[in-house]
Image (cartoon, rainbow, N blue to C red):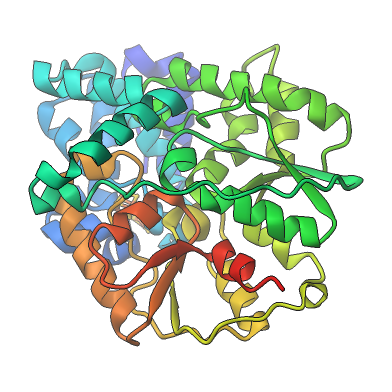
Length: 405
Ligand code: SF4
Ligand code: SF4
């Protein structure tokens, strides 16, 4: 797709990068068929090809309209379109660049700005989020059902193994995971411990930076990334084998640190090393001798939900399913595996109606085989699915942890 860049963007790195991505699109429209928001809203501008046209117009006219912002806001950044695209269009990167320009040109109404600011002040900060969640949990009995469902019940923290092994890996506690699903990293630590690996959480590391970055506050996001790199660096220099990501949404961002910070003269090479070391938990577990765990698995029928960040961004659509298969866990069939559950980072807050419809569709698609539990690989999807699911929703590593002898 030929694009004549407006003088505003002609000499900018971002303008040239967006132009190169646009050039790779042959506007065939294959991607439209697998876009959840196009399926939901039926408007070409709410599908990838339409959004690509809107970004092209923006780069040529140099002016963002409210319409452009609305249709880009409705994009989940699930990247299902990337998986479908025969031309390898890097849509996820393009939409980030487009959203960034729109955000700088179009002032949002005051309430939207306030809500976005509030989310950025709470979500990425572990202790602030934990405090707000605790207040919500205390007030839960007084709340209407629809809000109650969104507040996860208080979770008990489980013990980390105390053994120290020569093989060491790092884990990211992140921002919301310690208070919403604290069992996940502890379960990963226990399973890895039995495999002879010590899992360490660096307390100074926190939010991966995705919340700010995807809300078009790029520099703020970069600062979270730099802080994590600094926190991990001593352990990396001491020989940590991998940075194990138990939330695939954060994993996608950490795997991108190298690309995102490539222009940073101080952090570029460290960021690239961090990205090299970042592995989804399923990649780490798949490479180990699982027979040595002598697991005693239950016979609970299980539906696997693969988050978009794992299947479309990290290209690991079957990694969890294969592990569970190899262990003999009974998996039930599911439909529309490629479609997003509607969680998508902060999407469920800002685009609640679409998000709820996608959630209902996803739960129907996961329930066709009548599972007794659903497992997933990302804290956001886990909480979102659990808010409406009739069966328990867990992180898949808990299935292995509960089966340890
Ligand atoms: S499938 Fe790829 S090449 Fe075709 S319209 Fe979509 S993004 Fe463009
Ligand atoms: S990222 Fe997802 S929601 Fe956005 S255009 Fe692509 S398929 Fe549609």
